[in-house]
Length: 119
Image 1 (cartoon, rainbow, N blue to C red):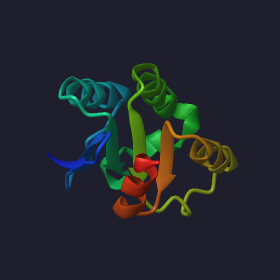
Image 2: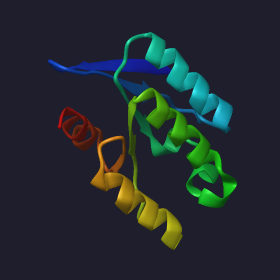
Image 3: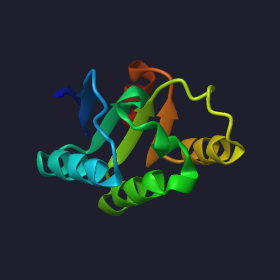
Image 4: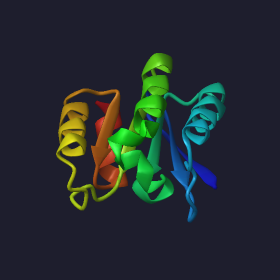
């Protein structure tokens, strides 16, 4: 895993780059948040492929646990991926509602993620 830094006048953004799954359980998400938070990052971009598929099953509770910590520490998170493949109405509603705000967003490209975080 490597971290690519994207800077702008107001934000220091970490993009997680990996060929492997980085978040396999909620503790992995919390560790990632803690590590990057203490390195001074204001926002994190992670790709869907780096997150265990159970994250996208809201019944598992993994997403709720991780995203609550991001909100508590006020670190913005953008997840990049193709979310159309998920058929769960509750997940689609969750993504829709999340994208209305600025704290947690789901987008289709890194370019879109950086643009969203700069708003």
